[in-house]
Structures are given as structure tokens and as C-alpha cells.
Length: 202
Ligand SMILES: Cc1cc2nc3c(=O)[nH]c(=O)nc-3n(C[C@H](O)[C@H](O)[C@H](O)COP(=O)(O)OP(=O)(O)OC[C@H]3O[C@@H](n4cnc5c(N)ncnc54)[C@H](O)[C@@H]3O)c2cc1C
Image 1 (cartoon, helix red, strand yellow):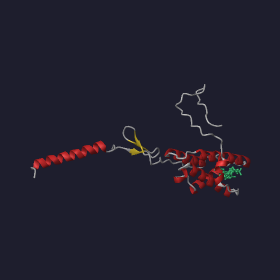
Image 2 (cartoon, protein in one colour):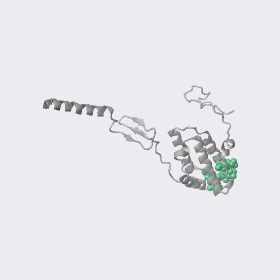
Image 3 (tube, helix red, strand yellow):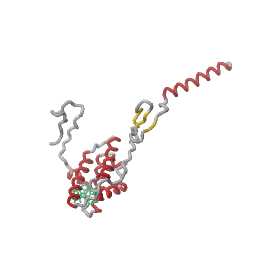
Image 4 (cartoon, helix red, strand yellow):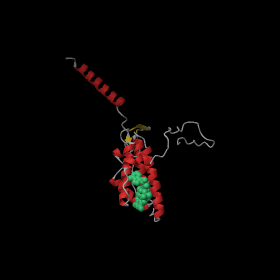
């Protein structure tokens, strides 16, 4: 049995080692999660981004535009809007990142506020409650495209229009866009006015 003071000395060393390793390896104690960005901040700056925890944003809110009385305008607007949305989901990434998923979800929630036909927007808001674009719905191009097709069919049902066969999405919305990579904005290949030339298309 070592003398008492040796045991006390060893005990102090062990406590010091534990305290030092806590100080070195532990995350800064004054960190907080910004719910609007999903970033974890410490005293200095962004400490790290929580990768597998998507940013929590609230896009809730009422319909912004008034009623659209003109039926012809409403029809034309609807056709253009559906075309835009279906083409978007069919060109959405096959394997989107959590940021891209968040962007798509945000788009539909904001569309349900800002759609220029107020009464259509109100209906769309209710539809998003019933069929929210969360979870698996934005997890791939296929899921997003099929989800939107389903949503459009719900509107078709309400308006007593024919139900669309979602197996024909690809052929109906073949935009002929080509698949050239998006121009890297860091390239110096700018036009005379400094605007990047548009690539892609056939
Ligand atoms: C969010 C939203 C809400 C709307 N709410 C209303 C409303 O409350 N009242 C109102 O009068 N109008 C509303 N509209 C407009 C309406 O949906 C139609 O766009 C409009 O009536 C014109 O109809 P359409 O028969 O030309 O075909 P659209 O429904 O405009 O469809 C255009 C084309 O898309 C294809 N298509 C049809 N169904 C699908 C599907 N499920 N998936 C993929 N492609 C499909 C077909 O080729 C069709 O010709 C809304 C539009 C939007 C975008």
C-alpha cells in the first residue's frame, strides 16, 4: 500500500488529466442552435452545421393575393403554373441534399401564399396540409414528381377534370432542356455586359 501522500498525488493527477481532456475535447460550452438556419454558433462564429438536421423554417402565413375573377386568366395562369412546377420536379436532382429538399419544400409553401389567384392559393394551402411535401416526398426526383402529379390530380378531382396517368409524366414534360452541366458561376466566361451566357438546350 503506497503512502497516503502518494495516493493523494496520484488522485490529483487523475483529476487534472480528466479536467484537461474535458477542456480539450468538449465542444465550446456557449453554443446555440439557430433554428432558422440550422447552424450551431459558438462565441466566435458558426461552429458547425448540423448536417442531418434540416434547417427549421416557418413558411406559414396567409394567402397574399386577392380573388382572381377572370376565368380565362385563371385557366391560363393555372396551365403555366402547372407546367412550371411539373418541369421543376422532373429536373430536380435524383439525390437531393437536405438543403435542396428544404428549398423545394419552401417553394411549394411560398407558392401556396403567393399564387396570383387568391382562391386557388387558399385551396392549395389546404392541399399542402393534407399532402405535405415533407419527408420522402422531396427525397428524390421521382418522389417529388409523383407527389406533384398526385397533388395536381387532387385539384383535377375538385374541378371535375380528367385524372392524369402519372406514368406519362416524362413524355408529357420532356422540355428538351438537354443535360449540360450548369455553368460554374466562378468561370470568367462572361458576356460583354458581365452576364453569364446561358448554356444548355438543343
Ligand atoms: C395550385 C393551383 C391551384 C388551382 N386552383 C384552382 C381553383 O381553385 N379553381 C380554378 O378554377 N382553377 C384552379 N387552378 C387552375 C386549374 O388547376 C387549371 O390549371 C385550369 O383550370 C386549366 O385547366 P386545364 O384543363 O387546361 O389543365 P391543367 O390542370 O392546367 O393542366 C395542364 C396540363 O397538364 C397535364 N396534367 C393534368 N393533370 C396532371 C397531373 N396530375 N400531373 C401532371 N400533368 C397533368 C395535362 O396535359 C393538362 O393538359 C389552380 C392551379 C394551380 C396551379
